[in-house]
Image: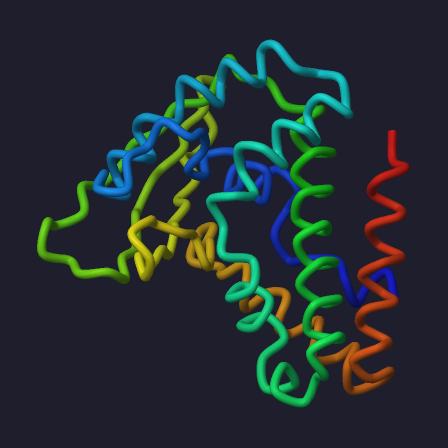
Length: 208
């Protein structure tokens, strides 16, 4: 079960993916997604400098990061074909626990991160790109390490941009989990996946 739910993305890559998501209530619905990325960097780096307590970090994640993600769509895509076979109760449990998995992973990684050596480059999104876009970014470190390419796949279906997938170095977060979720469902069914997610969340919540 431990191997089943271990993502292919490193904790730092997942951190960077969630860390530079579109945070805060100050973004107008009409703002372009690339503008949202640029606007969020200073706020997020400020959070990193000021909050190292695990509870405070989790609160920041819940308040600033979570509302900007379409967790239902992400869960649906990650579960794949088995989503339609799940009952409404199972779908809700899957979404709740997948959301918690991302938030808990984010919080644990964030508590070990430094805000001083991050920088972000954002490629502009064409004005006529439509309501489904990919915001391409590169995160660089002053330590001389190679920049990390992070792409945010976003949709605007209700007047606000929401993230429904993140790709780190062309590796999709949703696709990564889809593979491990499918293996767990094949072995233990949908309820088995829910139990595995719950166990992983308990482990992450008590870590450190």
